[in-house]
Amino acid sequence: GEGEGEGEGEGEGEGEGERDISVDPPQFNFGIVVLGNSESGSVTITNTGNTILQGSASTAPPFSIDAGQSYTIFPSSSHQVSLRFTPTDGGTVGGVLSLTGGGGATVPLIGTATVEGEGPELCDILDEIDTQFEMLKSDFAITDSDYDGDGLPEEFAVALVKFACNLPSEEGLGAATLNAFDINRVALASEANFNQIEPYRHALAVLLLISADTQDELIRILARGDVVLAGTYESVRESAGLFLPSSVPGLRLTQAYEVFDNSVKSANEPYSATGDFDGDGATNLSEYTAFVIGNGGDIQSFLNAATDTTVLPSPSEGEGEGEGGPVGCAAGEGTSQTVLVGNGILFALLTACLLLLPAGRRKE
Image (cartoon, rainbow, N blue to C red; front, side):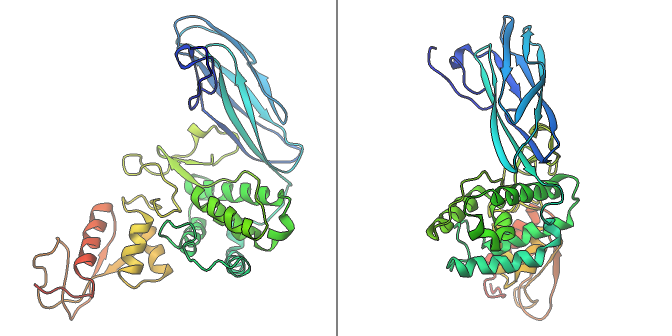
């Protein structure tokens, strides 16, 4: 019990067996703050031990403590530490809130500063993003349509990000997407190699929010062109029904907006292949495979499926119709049917139909 121990939300202490302090949230994102302003927030410390917990909180600029710096907490009781982020420079910055007593804990802090009116809104530059995306591929010799290797070509993931502009911008996935785009755009502007990536800055801000894997591969691709990304970038991710980064500056992550019921969705990055944008139980890759690869569709076909607004043409009516396949399969020639895709179960049936009907026909 003499060494240091680490644990999510509990930070570094004097040993796992000695830690009687719990912190909520385990990390705090102040979101985007206009230079000259500040943003406040708080974390809650709980004494999970059987004796009185005494200690203090500390951090460093641009983060500060407004109230609750010292504490004496009885067993099973809590104490709140009020925090403030007051940026002095543009860009994303990280820090740490250190807590003593009960084994100690650390809470990662992050905040992003921007100049008022700086930069366009994501939803106002969708065509420009497409142009920059094509320029990026050409200038950096990106020939693989799926350069992060997750099975879903990047142009389809980018199309999903753009579709987020149809979602409510003040909550949930829509707000988290706009927030992540702004964080990435500001972080890119703070890079030492910004002049080299400036022509693609909006497309890069979109690509970097797709997933952590996309970030890693994109950083490697740019490095081959002697461009180094050293900043902190945000991907949009869903965990326990919440979307991160926090949609509203100042709200702790556990207060982020609920978007999808957790019984339907597991933790995912909604713009990646393994993510489930519309929460119907089918991954984006599954819907891309079924509607584009298996059914000859295009980006719009994928968007309709991945956002749960489409209909899937069934194979033509004819010989063997309705026999031997999964419920809902129509096989043969002569007619065209449509089936609404509304949930994961029905999608699974439609996928099974496609597998049994590779050429649009099924014979017994």
